[in-house]
Length: 272
Image 1 (cartoon, rainbow, N blue to C red):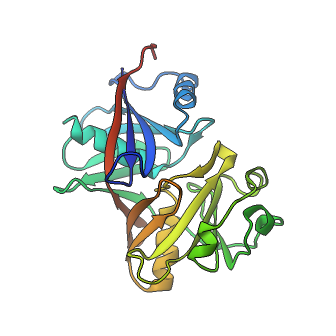
Image 2 (cartoon, helix red, strand yellow):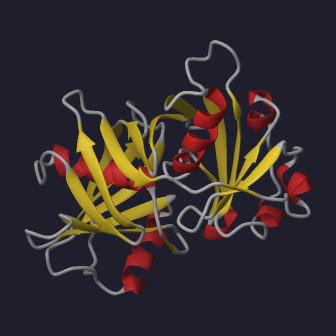
């Protein structure tokens, strides 16, 4: 069984967000416990498992994602990584449709190698900051929004880019404040070449800080499009590895565009 590690939302190795990718046979997924063991062993933000579906249906591949500790409803960077593997190995061409827990997702690879994911736009609901949020995050929120069932984060607006970059959260305290995690964001400083900045903290699912979170941008896109008056934006996730996500708001759908690089291609030496 081939296993690959792909850096997503970047055009160079050792940046962006690494994801494990395993393409399985048409017989389907093994037991959940085995998938979780592999994801725990890899210890990446997410490991994606995909298998082909019979032709003629609403999707081409079934897709699931696991963090080191749990399965998640939706993951952008591991979907981008899976698409990259499908195309670079000539396993799939054109637009690929994935059946996932959050519905059918599509991905399209452009001639220049960039990949666009079609994901559901997160429904944003203004929320009251939970008690202890400012102390756990280490900054005072300007606004807080709930991001709906599939994302499950608190979207927290801060004063400026410098405040986002300076965060040093109390991860144990943050873990108790949302279903999945906290997305901290602010408008970009002038002349940066991107429109907004963010960082993502997900200690509740075993990830203290995620390098680049595609699914979070389904909430960041409508949030910043409403404030900046444009549907086409570029976000920088300002983790230590860093990565750019281009967003295009299309009503109840959001396109997330980025690149990917395969950095490890090996063999899984245990049976599934």
